Image (tube, rainbow, N blue to C red; front, side):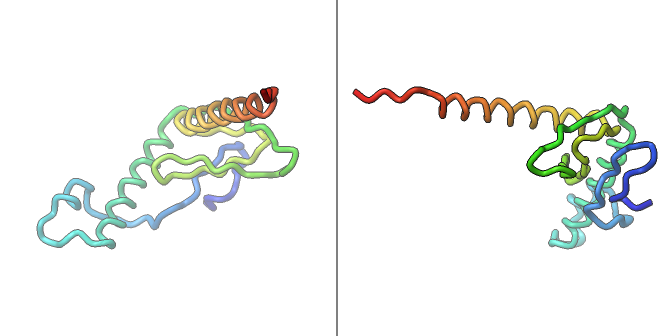
Length: 130
């Protein structure tokens, strides 16, 4: 199935961010003394960890997410990711995503709104020159 395509069930699929390969378990890869740790070894190790994390996300209960549409950029897609597993979520439409993805987006959204409010409050303060 194309990982960038939205299914008829309106579930958002994660974007593929690494090559799915069969590699040795992470603990063996990191503690192996047979081969020095190099970039290729680390890539395989992280790919394995990402693959197992992706499976963990897929096993989580799915919840509805509705990201508000940005009037300045309609049709926008918002990337939400955890540990290298990224979901591209279209704005203005309801989709099912794993609970952790929803919680990550919600936390980010709430913190962004709070920061924007603080900036607006600062800009609206009356400046008194004495």
